[in-house]
Amino acid sequence: LLLQAAAGIAATGAPVLYATGEESTTQVRLRATRLGLASGAVAEAIHVVAETGVGRIGELARADRLGMLVVDSVQTVASEELDGPPGSVGQVREATQRLMEYAKTEGVPVILVGHVTKDGTLAGPKTLEHLVDVVLSVEGDRTGGLRLLRATKNRYGSTEEVGVFEMGERGL
Image 1 (cartoon, one colour):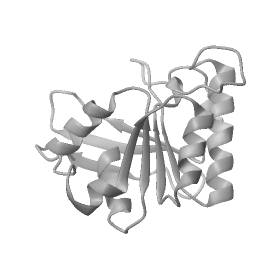
Image 2 (image 1 turned 45 degrees about the vertical axis):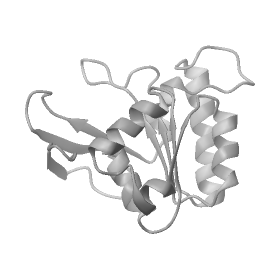
Image 3 (image 1 turned 90 degrees about the vertical axis):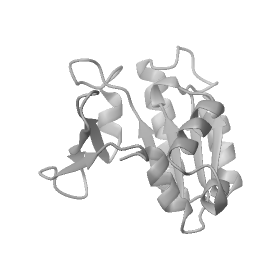
């Protein structure tokens, strides 16, 4: 879903930075290939980096005039200036605040991926949910073909709507 959203932004001609701390760039490239997003102008506009340092992610983001920044996942990102492991309350707060500052000063949408536990709550500190403007969750049975996109927090609109997507060979 994130690669498809990034492709939509990249199709406008604005570059997208996809910072992944969860997967290697090779894994992301394989997924992009499966979705048909690995070649052409759109693929050239999506820059994938395997990076977990929030300072470095900020530097890379400021180097281009981005259309969007994706950080997957915020629980893997850490500030070099702060003690504590990635995913700790302090690190999640610091990384999120620095990325929010970037979004506000540069006017660039930032998508932070956060993991959830088996019971459906945000993994790690609840801090993340309080800092961001919108919280979306993608739900569905791994064996089924349908996925629900649900807003649990939205400062800009309703949380009463649900998107229904079908998982296919070429993504949602």
